[in-house]
Amino acid sequence: MLVLLSWKFSLSNRESVRSEAGDAPWPPPPRIAKASMLYGQTNSLYERALRTHARHNELHGYAMHVLREEISRGYWNKLSYLHSLVVQELAKPAEQRVEWIMWTDAHTVVLNPHVPLHAFVPPPDFPTVHFVGPRTASGALCSSSFFLRAHPWSLDLLTRALAYPLLNAPADPFSPPGSGASDPAAAPSLDPDTTMDALALAAALNASAASDDPAHHHAIYPPRAWFAARPAPATMADPAGAVAAAEAAAAAAAAAGLAADAAVPAFGGEGGVVAAPPDGAAADDEEDAGVRAGALLVQFPGNGNGNGNGNGAAKWRGMSAWLDAVERERAEGPRGGGAREATARGDGSDEDEMAGSPDEQSPGASPGWSLHYDRSFYPNVVARFWDGARDARAVLAGLDRVAEKLGGNPARHPAELVRATERLRDALRWRPDRRRELDDAVWYGRWFLRAAEGSI
Image 1 (cartoon, rainbow, N blue to C red):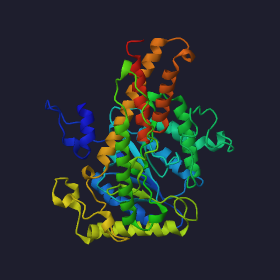
Image 2: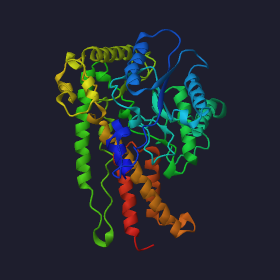
Image 3: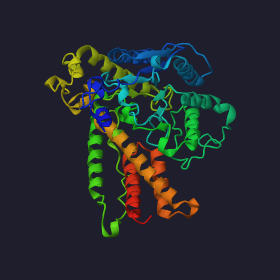
Image 4: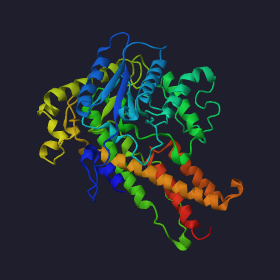
């Protein structure tokens, strides 16, 4: 429990946290490196975007690997380069390896360099999770930024993805042969700005999920706003407006979530059986509200020729506006108010507060992104995500124990047990980022376990 509380509340200074018994400090944050690629014809916006990573890397000591020469054909450069980086790390002695590699496409712009990457990798009690990457609202894989553990499983994943065009017919790209996904429509797939390498990676993840133990799966999909936020088309060239809209949407979603939570009946009732909880799927998660104040980065996917998040020239105008705002804040401080290095202290001083709310600022003004991690929206939503996954695993293990006690043919198990298990397994495997959906599945599983007490 102490380890989990440390992870939840002290991400920014875990090295200095000690147990109540005065033991040695908790283990330091995992070693993380970054990787990206940019080659071919010079693109000044992409070069500027890569430069926004420099301050982040300097503050946290991240090595940055950038592929500058084409090593494969077209889309396959990313997967080939990642494969080579993982091989290089695994060839080192364990104590010298980086533990995680964060991939970011060249169109990602770092907004808040004070956010440490170890905030997003799995806590120590999730040792089998080797891929952490978000999805779009439609369920498509966001391959522009994700984390990959330096592990043999990652090599297998990348090898499978690289082999995809040779081993799979293109007629059915969303459900590769033998994927066995229980809900193919919910599995990572594509959206209009997804590239061929993302298609192959999604197919490899689908195939891997088919053979995973659901309680110890190797991939997990966090909310997109953690490190893959995108501005809405209406605010693509208006950073302050985008942040203001995201904060308003987050507040509305949080209020809707509280109302839904209040409507859930308590355990108990006559005979220990209560009605199913209300459907919270309609309540949007505040984590998916967009580019929030203090967000690590913003993305501008698509090729700038009319597909993807950028609508042709709109992508380049948007990137330019956000880069201008970031560079202005780095040089002058938010809204021209001086340097913001004090935000790294987290000492509770007035200097730690963001100067003004985003909706007070004019288009193009800096929304004041450089918030210390502990003062951003991240600690609550990150802790809640892993707590939800942790609860789901515990309840799923309980349902499996009930099934084991019943023994015999699973087809003869009670329909409620089968329904509760499948619902929770699918939510944990494919949609852990949909907090309300996962909460409802956990509630339903707990309801069955409570109802089954003393009868099995």
